[in-house]
Structures are given as structure tokens and as C-alpha cells.
Image 1 (cartoon, rainbow, N blue to C red):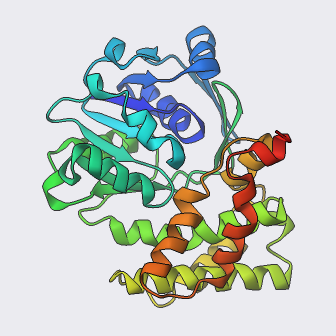
Image 2: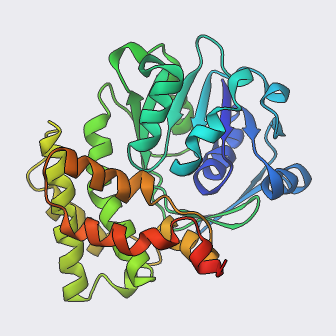
Amino acid sequence: MRVGILGAGAIGGFYTAHLVRAGADVQVLARNATLDAVRRNGLLLESDQGQICVRPNAVSDKAADLGAVDILIVAVKGQDTAGALAHVKPMLSDSTRLLSLQNGFAGLEIMEKVVGADRVLSGITYVPATVLAPGRIRHTGRVTRTVFGPYTPDAENGQGAALAELMQVAGLDVSYMDEPLPAIWSKFVMLAPFHSVSALTRAPLGHWIDCAETQGVYRAAMAEVVAVAKARGVALPPDLVERHMAFTLTQADRRTRASMLDDLEQGRPTELEATIGWLVRAARQHSVPVPIHDLAYALLKPMADGRAVLGV
């Protein structure tokens, strides 16, 4: 299978390493320091289980150098989706599917406009990973869970199921679903609050989850997302918030940091608009009160493009 990777950062780098090791023909579209590092040294994935160092079949900043792929995994940050997709046309054939492994729903909506809903696969990953340096990724803990499937029933052409099987061969916890959107919402119930609390406390999970007041904010924020999902006609399990709380308290690696926190500390643009901002706007469309996310959005917006942190 010929797999394209759009964005060899934390998540894109994680899947590049595992797919290359599993025998896929991996074509990486990267740029700047990441492009130079992967070309020079390959891509290094570090984890508690050891290291994987691979060289993709090809890496370039020009889509024309890579050619058409069966599936293009879109792993750029939400705010970069539209700009990145403008450069990938040579990697797309009539049968190519775009797989979003991004946070939230904003990127999916952009992909739908660019290539049509029937060409999109929607997915989520629970993999906690960070970029240590260009071409060097750290996977924290043991979680490798990923779920994806067709954005609409017409999107299925066999490529998605084949990719899921390849990921399973690579030893990853991957599920292919005919209707993945409820699962994506399920993760978003945890993701938006986790990003909000982590970015505002400026601390990894273990530094705030045992504080009763902060834990209460986290739980209430998850309930806000459930209310928005319900307003949009998405049925979620009634005990979802408590299940997420139990996972966070007993199974999640306490070193886990939200990617938004990493971006804030590095002065980089954040995914605020594509995650928390998207939720706030969706809530307003359906007249659902989300005061915790409203506050998080207002307090984090001045740093959304990184300039306030850098002092520019």
C-alpha cells in the first residue's frame, strides 16, 4: 500500500515510523527543518518500549516528487489544513482517500470542501506524542489506540480497511468503523476540556488532575461538550463523562501534555480555533451554554498565533 503523510510532526511521525516498519510504501510531504532532518538522519520514534529509526521511501517538500498515493494521512495542525491541502494535488488520484487524524472537526469540514465528503475518512488517535526535535518524536506511555472510517458511506473503497489491517500488523491498536463520527465525538468530549485545562494550568496531567477544584472544572467542561453533541443529534453513552474521568484518573499517563500547551510554551500558533473555538461556535449555533470553554477561548485567544508569547 502506498501511504502519504502530510505533516511529519508528532502524530504524522508516529505513523510514519510504524508504517515503514510494517512494510508500507510511505511518502512524506514535509518542509523546512523536518524535511532536512528526515532526509539526513531518517525519522526517530522514541518510547518506553524502545526506539524505531526508519527512512521513508521518499520525503520531499514537493508533492509532485512523491506522486499519487492510496491514502493520504492528514496530520497537520488544524490551522494549517487549508494551506497544506493546497499543495497536495499531485498526490491525489481519483481513488485516493484523505484520512484525518487531527483533533476535532474543523479539518474534516475543510477536507470535505476541498475533495468532497466521499473522498474523506474521519479518524481519531489517542496516541500521546510530542516532537522533541525535527524528525525526533517521543511517544509517551503505551496507548496506540486509533479509530477511523468513512466520513460518509460513499467514502468506502477498500483503502481504509486495508490501511487499518496494515496498522494492526504494525502492532497498533486500530479499529476500522463503518460509522466513526460518534467515536470522534467521544474523544472530543475529553480532548477540548483537556486542552483547555492543560493550556490554562500550563502543566501536564499529573500536576492538576488530583486537585479537586481543577478536576471539577475538567468534569464540567466534558459535560459541556456532551451537551453540544446532543444538540447536533449525536447520541453518546450516558456515562461517557464518568468513563473518561475514570480513564484519566487510573489509566492515562500522568506525564501527558496537551499539544496546545507545547505550542504555547514554544511560542507557536495553537489549534485554538480548530478545537475550542470550533466548539464555542457550534455551541452558539445551537444555543448551548458552554461557560468553561467560553472562558478558556477568551483567555487563550491572545496567544493563538504565538506572538504574545514571543513578545512580538
